[in-house]
Length: 186
Image 1 (spheres, rainbow, N blue to C red):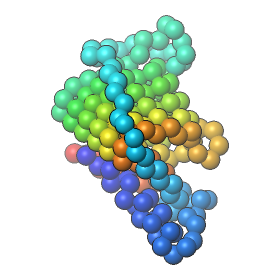
Image 2: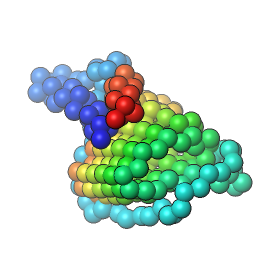
Image 3: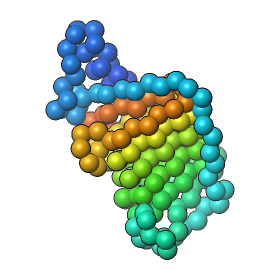
Image 4: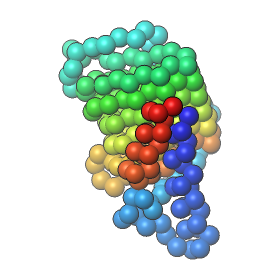
């Protein structure tokens, strides 16, 4: 799974800036990097077990049925159409298009791409998640990697991280697109 390939470039940029005593260039996304490593106890959480489609609507709409994706060794594309989306899977790849409300990722060893989410919550372990546009990131569990391109509001999304050795890193849109293209071809 290649979402994790997004992390090394951003981390190397940050590492080089620390070694040379220079700040990372925060105006050029290809060179920009912000990294967060956390320690603490993992949290747990489970999503519903069934897959279901739903009507389109806004994330806060009480009539919009959430999008639920599950499976093991699954590869799937879906359009969240403004709905909240729950992914409870293992060793799977998901490509989520459209503007989502809250996207919650549970399970382990997943590779997930999200076009846009108000809130992205990553639980479970060893997940690689890339989100193009996001307002809030919540990362728990162990060894999760989250790469983001742009914040919906302001320069950076609001980040809350728990668990252990989780990484949250900003990447360029080109890095996101290259990794997305490579994973879709596999």
